Amino acid sequence: MARLDVTETFHGITFPGHLHTQDSLQSALRFPFQDTDILIVSYPKSGTTWMQEIVTLICNRGDPHVCQTVPNWTRAPWLEQHYCAMVLEKYPLNPRVITTHLPQHLLEPALQGSKAKVIYVSRNPKDVVVSYYHFCKMAKFFPDPGSFQDFLNQFLDGRSYYGSWFDHVKGWTRQTETMSNLLHITYEEMSLKISAFLQRPLVEEELNSCLKHSSFSSMKNNTMVNCTLISPEIMDHSKGCFMRKGELGNWKSLFTDEQNQHFESVFSSRMQDCSLKFVWDVPERVSTALEASGGVLYTIASDALHCTW
Image 1 (spheres, rainbow, N blue to C red):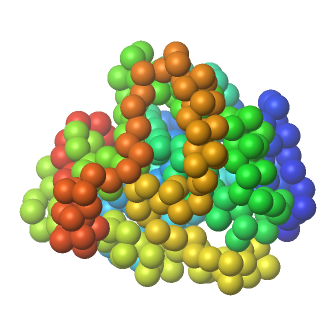
Image 2: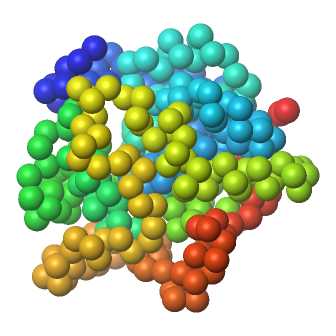
């Protein structure tokens, strides 16, 4: 299924047709969630791959075998993509780990009454748009993103693929007040700590294994995660790496002062009804600690996912 030049528009939101069809998108809205399911939700380039890795490791008590032998799109398939049902049937797991970029208002009916654990991952939008821009230059199932200025304008106007970042973040995070089975965690928290997260009685050896194998350097070298298994006809690896930097504040490498001022203006206007706070850069003391720890400075504690081993 190539469809590299096809764009699907669904409920006013555009999706790359390479992996999405009208049928697959419609099926996602009717998906029969099980109470033991773990649903990872994010806007593109917000730390989804990292969360897939962490959840997989914890659900396997730190054993990296699955992470190192099964592609992440198979062990945590995308709900709205055409192959999801086939993968879930072929590889029955308990708990099932499922991933999505769909906005909250589209999935609300399917999740209503479900006890499935929902993890919403957000990231500061300046880093999101820079990472998204570089990804769109690599991925041939996206149109040419043009200049960064053009791409930034589309992002701020809500015309990017997968819709408006502002609507996506506000839609999901507002549910934390009413959904006890929804955890909101930021990319920045994952970089520094995964706290109050997966309530699992891991022994020290299992915990250390989770930390080691979900580190950015480990994932960057893992072919099950870094997208090097994807054909160059679909992903142009000469234009960059899927696992590019994984650092906070990288937006400064591309934003001009004028672009930053415009971004701040739009952000303030669109988020005035939202109390979320974002980390835009790494304080020097934290940066030093990150370097000393090889980029891994977090703990996996307990609070959200009650998996059955």
